[in-house]
Image (cartoon, rainbow, N blue to C red; front, side):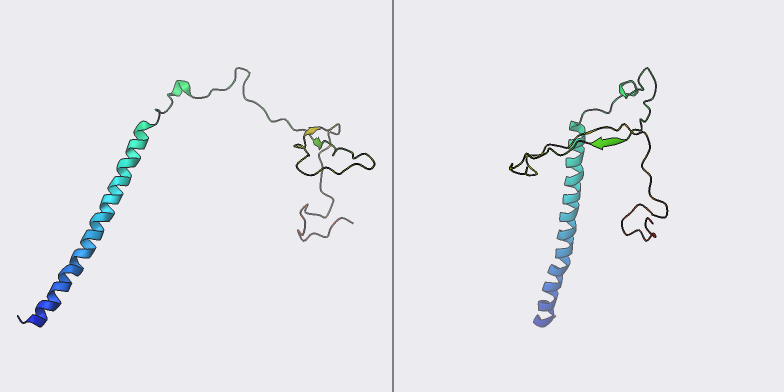
Amino acid sequence: MNTASMQLAAPSGLLLLVPIVVAVAVLVVLWGGFWLGNRVKLGEPPRPRPEEQPHLPPEGAVHEIRENREPDDVPVIPKGGRPLTPYELTNMRTRPSASKDRPRWGKGTTGSFGGGGLGAH
């Protein structure tokens, strides 16, 4: 072998070594991830036993209650008073409505803005 072929052979050996080192590094990172995940899982409390699971109340299943709700009114500003800012308003609460009729969409409408219906006439 002459020196030209020796110079070509040396870099090719290094080029073969780089993917092997990268593969070993990836395997070490994957193994470390599984090891760390297992340690975290072992530190968690055990799963609840069947007798520790939630049960239905003695009176049975809770049923849905349907009612109409009305929002509380925004406070009235006295004459010459300063308007309230959004930060001064509290969470607007609701109260049960006296009306038991469920709100319905007008005939010929889809109930959504821009829904393509003819609209209320």
